[in-house]
Length: 171
Image 1 (cartoon, one colour):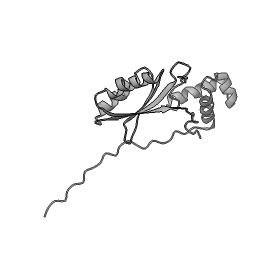
Image 2 (tube, one colour):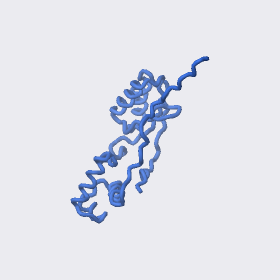
Image 3 (cartoon, rainbow, N blue to C red):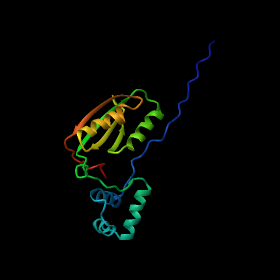
Image 4 (cartoon, rainbow, N blue to C red):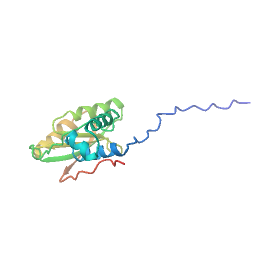
């Protein structure tokens, strides 16, 4: 009688990630900081209705928990002399993990690059770039993107205007 084939056990994979729970005070702190990350601790504490020491401890805990990844400055490329903005969709020839990771890291370091997203779908990356002139944009795409080994396609879309969203909903 032939032996039954043994079923291969699958690794369970990572545990499902629960959405971090924020109480009313933490949620209010996040909303206030999202509206104005430069708000002083005293003004933030007053807006939420807690003591300043409690406020700074709560914000520090939100950072330590990874809820708040950091505080940043949003620059206006137009006022900085880079009014030509574009999204460049890039397709790579292969999907070797090292090649994909290297592309994202290296392109993010190029001057004029605002952000780089590794995405799913027909393209592998979307590169948000700001340049001074259309010629500079063309040179950027040809020199830094399409000339790279492994890049098989790039499609550039000019950005006429953007509208900032409200961000992730906070309970």
